Image (cartoon, rainbow, N blue to C red; front, top):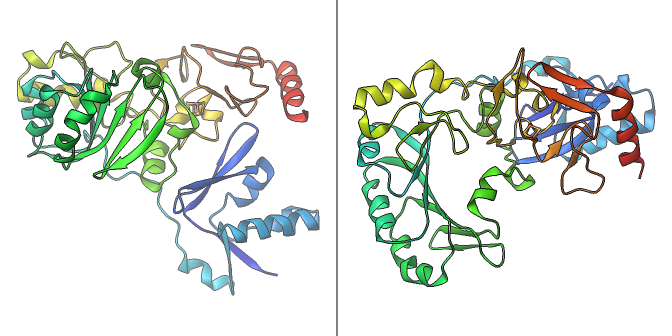
Length: 359
Ligand code: SF4
């Protein structure tokens, strides 16, 4: 009998109707059935004999070998040569992502001078001297990438400032909203992304292109909230918030000392959303995309689980995105979500599911 192990960077994740293999090495993903998920969800040898139909079994093995999700070993002793990869997150609760407006207080720059930011997003109505000056004032800080969000696209301004932007090595991307045509160009090592929607709409949306399959993202989402963990947003008035859509303020940066600022962002209340795991959240806990999506909605605490007042663009109970044919929202598919929990009308859901998937 042949012996197969699963590549430890190919992780099966179960959803309500189907499962996904996250190929963290190749940054790709593959859908599989729930039955096949249960067979693959082991760190030991995979027992393909659980599939009684021989052609189904050999098809699956061929499919998985081709994708290098599984590999064959010569003897049972070889198992220990391929140790299990830990899913624990080692660095926790560090401030890594900041979102600010172009008129952010200088205090912010002082306060984060000792932090290593992976990502600094700056929102501005336009590209102008003020924005360039702000970017320059971050030049001596440890920041992996600066992302600019320009609310109003103006082609003349872009021409005027393009060379200036190219001189700023930390800029990773410049994102324009309200453009005529969506496209992306890479120039001077900067990604210029042009979006037709408004910035307001863009920040609300979860779309397939905001799914990220890689090891860092997976580990973060597996343990924490992939949007709120390590994040801070300073709104236009200087209020410290968890994220762009949050209304709760943890105080105003303009009236804080260095110590007060750091106490605030390290407080349990501020860190609560970042420490949330998708398994603690209604609907998302049943979703096969849960360790690759960036959900920027504001969760609310329910009786046992957290929940959202607004629906995601994906309905995991019928496995459909809202732009796909046959999509129905949660309510229409028999799911009621509230603070007290998630109630499933089984008859309505199976009728809806069968109708969509038999077409
Ligand atoms: S339901 Fe939406 S937000 Fe929740 S895990 Fe799935 S894709 Fe992400």
